Amino acid sequence: MATVPENGPSPAPPLSRRLVLFMAVAAGVGVANLYYLQPLLHEIQVGFHAASWQVGLAATLTQIGYALGLFLFVPLGDSLERRSLIVRMCIVTAGVLLILAASLNVWWLVSSCLVVGAATIVPQLVVPFAAHLAPPEERGRTVGTVMSGLLIGVLLARTLAGLVGQALGWRAVYVLAAAAMMGLAALLRASLPLSPPESRTPYGRLLLSLLHLIRAYPDLRDASLLGAMSFGAFSAFWTVLSLYLAGPPFHLGPGVTGLFGLAGVAGALAAPYAGHVASRLPAIWTARLASCLTLASFGLFWTFRHSLAGLALGVVLMDLGVQATQVSNQARIYSLSDEARSRVNSVYMVTYFLGGALGSFVGASAWDRFHFGGVCAAACVLLAIGILGVAMVAPSRLRDAIR
Image 1 (spheres, helix red, strand yellow):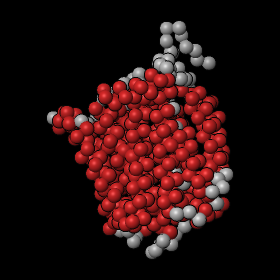
Image 2 (image 1 turned 180 degrees about the horizontal axis):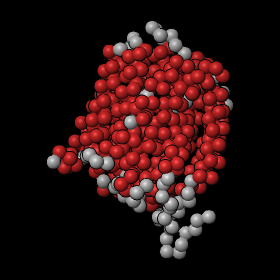
Image 3 (image 1 turned 135 degrees about the vertical axis):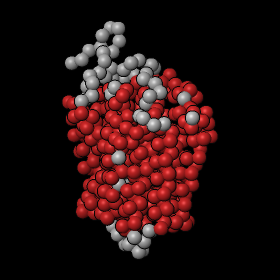
Image 4 (image 1 turned 30 degrees about the vertical axis):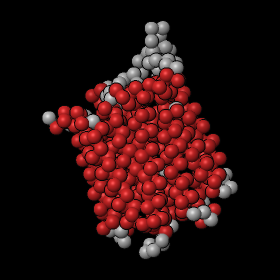
């Protein structure tokens, strides 16, 4: 077993290709817990005789809970041994997934979604851990590979939840998810290297230091705003998709809704390439151009709103844009501080998932009032704020990138 020498922590072993791929799988399995809900919303709504705003609230609180967990727990990755922290959070997540599966009414479910979101932070401990282990020249590619696993988990979670939910009911989805997290805990305990922290900063000072990081790094503010709005548009679409496909002209169930997740896997496959490009070109531009792809996808959604093939094509373009934005942003922020990488990631991801919560809320509200066209318009507004807001958040960085 690795030990910590008296003069400081021993360096972690270098990343092997096998370990990078395993961390990608861990990120995907962990993050899937946030997205099982989306193709099941119509089934849950019918089962609990709930209003669409109530199941929309469950999706929103999942994102808010995740942002809360990122703020409270992810900074601990800079002051605790990382492997033990990751394994413990896997076990906690399994427990709260079982509580959600036992929901007796819609409010139990809504409350449980908040707690599940807060506990599901394993992916955001694994990603900076991979960046910590990778040499600087390989950091963009490594982050891109792990993020590929994460996005595939996001997309296939919907497919799995839709198929299992249609065959066995939505509760079975969460029982199986809890079993998967327990299995993941055992595998991570056996496979991840020990990684003693670089510092033993007290917890209160860790949280206060997040404010310092926000003030100190305009690149962090820049990436956080763009990432939040990109993910907000993404969440707006996925929050209402099962409701849209359940009505005219489609009248489809959760199984078909989940299959739309497969259409976005092409976007996940572009993540390593996006990380490679981000390490050689100004990431401020790669992220903005990627967000423009996401903006174009909502034009496709509106134009082909009555065609399943057109919607699937839009999903491919949307997921490509969102994933490329995310990888470009994360490759950029992980170079800001070696000692505070988990906290930098915490600031970014808290903002990112608050943007997702905003998108879920805006999407559900636009659906109730303006149906699918309103959802597309609202998503475009969010993306425009992110793309144009970069210039306002960090004008000096934008000028440097132009030069």
